[in-house]
Length: 328
Image (cartoon, rainbow, N blue to C red; front, side, top):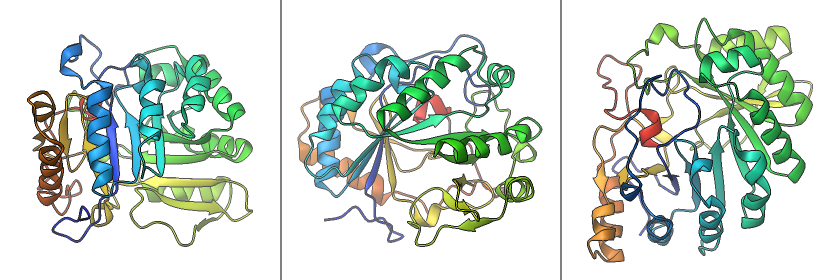
């Protein structure tokens, strides 16, 4: 029986966080000072992750994405990738990374079966990169990106758009994507920071970015027959060179088409990035629970799913966990 919620949304996409740790410190995600990361024993093992994924796939999940924190700080990640690629029924596996450690791991990930990468990269300006991430790792990120492209990975770049900071980056990123055959996806700044700094006035909106791109590069044409369940609305430039996407959770939320579930690194199932509640699966895995018990928790998570996060309304309540703890 398929995973269908009370609003007739089919769920076939599971995002798996493998760690809450990260090797950069983006100001809109993590505090600058000491961070209470989870102890190692609190994190799901590869065997536990694989088990949850197998049960989810038996219920109709077809797409998996590995996230963090920064997933590449998790030791031996290619081992997990190979295990997940071996699950019958999985049609697509992706990984979201900041790219800092990718140059040294890209080949092993490719050999394990991974083919899709989403880079988190907000700017091509080294000084602004350091301002945003509080780390001087821009050169390592670009080296990882070049390695991925050379190996043949399908690459997208995700750029968080913060008003009064990221305006200078919108056009250079799009031009870079046009030159290298990489889709740039602009993400409206969301209230998932660890310091409560989010404000709607700090969001660089999709319409504002599209206006700049049209003026500086050229007309944008919506790509036909897009998957309505995909988070990004995609456009191609009228000259046929390059594509951009927008994840506009603030101005144009896509909740009514959402097909995602999330597994946190400490074994909680969530039906939304912004969910207030979550259900424990780690306790079942470590307490002798059966696959049917795990299946029941997955189904219950889907059953409880709300109509949407209402981030654009006065009723919105930010989740108690920051982004790095939930999983990107």
